[in-house]
Image 1: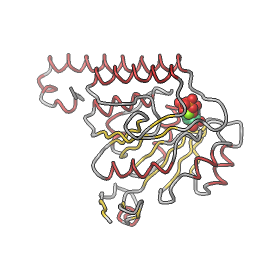
Image 2: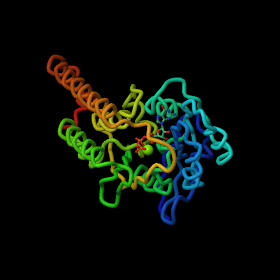
Image 3: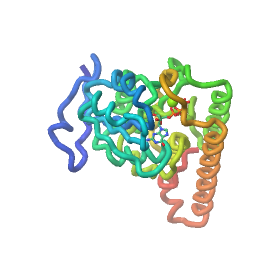
Length: 276
Ligand SMILES: Nc1nc2c(ncn2[C@@H]2O[C@H](COP(=O)(O)OP(=O)(O)OP(=O)(O)O)[C@@H](O)[C@H]2O)c(=O)[nH]1
Ligand SMILES: [Mg+2]
């Protein structure tokens, strides 16, 4: 059995951080893994979500978007140690940022609450992270991935936006607007998230590249939402994603302009997030 040790972060239970736990027949890990679940009226889907979560995860943080059904009660019943965080603001991005702040693990995994993500895949994400990646990015279009949950229009929009990001930021992504990702907590210091809606996934994907972090795509299968209706609106949210791409692009131009005019900045290109 191979294993990888990462030093405990400050303030963390040293026993927990150095104790290896088997996560597959080939791998044992030391770092605690937190799973963040943004949920708004997902009571009917939660049984499917929790059923697939591996028992070796350290904690589940459920961010409740003021659900009017019994999302919170069902979560507590299914996973008695669940940490429920009430959301103050609105939107999936706001929920995730709130959830990340509440996590105590060294590794953070983002999982939707609509039953579209298979928790059994978490082991692939975590394996990539303990093997050297900073950010493990799910992809429905990498070899071995797939989706039951995207219309033709959404596939097309995602593909176009993904091509724009690849071209403008020097990424080599096969998927862009997908919510199943995992990363080392230290990534959050480098990407400073500041958005509220579904564009959060795109913002993360762009900023990890700009920060020079090591990104590995993980083939992932997205199932159909089991119950309820999607909160995503293709046109409205597609435009928000485009706006984020353009804004990140103009920030990058501004940094380049400053670089030309400031020898100090030019001496530290890594801080400027240059990747291409
Ligand atoms: N806490 C919280 N969760 C949210 C909010 N908006 C969406 N979510 C959750 O984010 C996850 C993804 O939302 P979905 O509505 O499934 O959107 P999607 O997966 O992009 O779109 P579909 O593929 O159509 O399902 C689900 O678990 C939602 O419950 C929100 O404002 N607050
Ligand atoms: Mg969904």
